[in-house]
Every structure is written in C-alpha cells, then in structure tokens.
Length: 236
Image 1 (cartoon, rainbow, N blue to C red):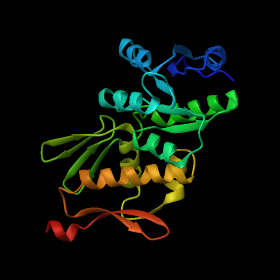
Image 2: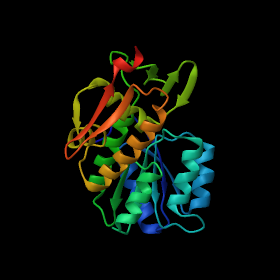
Image 3: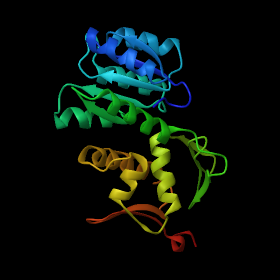
C-alpha cells in the first residue's frame, strides 16, 4: 500500500545492508528517503533539508541516536522521531521517549510493520483540519493548538506537537475523567508501558506550563487516569 503523499524521511542507520533495504522498501512505498551512516552525517543531512520524519538507529558510530535526537529536538520540536534499536532494554526505550521520541521499533522488524508505524505517527502529527477546534480557554490561559502556544496574559509558552495534542485532548474532556488507555490510544495509537511513561513525562511538563493559574490543575485519578479541572471559585 503506497502512502498518499510523498513524505521525506531521514534514515540514520550504520548497518549497510539494512540501510539499503530500508531505502529501497520505503521508496517503493512512496517515501523520499535520505540515508546517513552515522550520527554526525545524520545531523549534517538534517540541517540541509526539511524532513517529515526521522528514523534513528540508537547505536550509531561517532554520535549515537539519542545524542542526535537531542540535537534535533533543540532546533525542531515538531518533527516526529522513531528509534530503531537492536536492544529491548526498558531503559533505552524510556530514554528515547524522554528525548521526545514518538515511537520505537526493535530489530529485527518486519518492513511492513515499520511502514504502518510510520504512517500512524505521521497521521497523528499532521496539522489539524480547519474544521476542528484549535482555540481553547483554560482558566486565564488561551491555548492555540494550531500554533502550539499557551498564552497567559501576554506571556507566551511555545509547546511541542505532542504536548499540544495531550493538552488539547484534556481540553475536549475538561472536568471529566480521561482514562489512561483512551488517551494513549488516541494520541500514540498504542497502550503499553513505555508510551504510558512518556505520557507521564508530558503531563509533568503541562502541569509546569499551567502553574501560573492556581484554578487550573491536571489531577490524578488513582488507578484510572486524569482530569483537567478548572476551579472557577478560585477566580472569584
């Protein structure tokens, strides 16, 4: 199945055979692919062009995939990143999510599964349609999902795509309990331990962003999920 529009992917993989197979298969599936063999050349390629997604091997020569992802996130918080790893260590996967990774896939993997993962992440990271609600008021905050900004009385906080998606989901269900499983499947497309830890990281960040208004809180509902609460009495 060929993806509808041609998306440009940066693949950073030092295994010569696997890299060549990935390029051939992804191009056959309708993607434009740039291949780099190590973390340094991967960074150089990233600076040369705009990419719709980065696929980074974790164990790279000269600069590993985690260090490369950190560099990328310092200049671009929106581009999706999928980690390719030969390890199934929990610590590596959590590190990848903490650095802003959108997904991971463990080698050896099926090429068709990889394409489905790529398509799913690209679909979730697409700019919202104009018919969808993109402006929200949360207590004293004005949240612009389209531009990924949170405005508190003229003070702007710029958010990442994933932070914006999580906050938007809470806004749509404000003052209602949001179950962990539901938000994970809606935003990550998958409910598992590693994505759950990633969700916790994003909620911690959102709480920091929203601390300027004591009437707004993201509360834990033990064993169930979370609820975005606006205590209007505190504003009176």
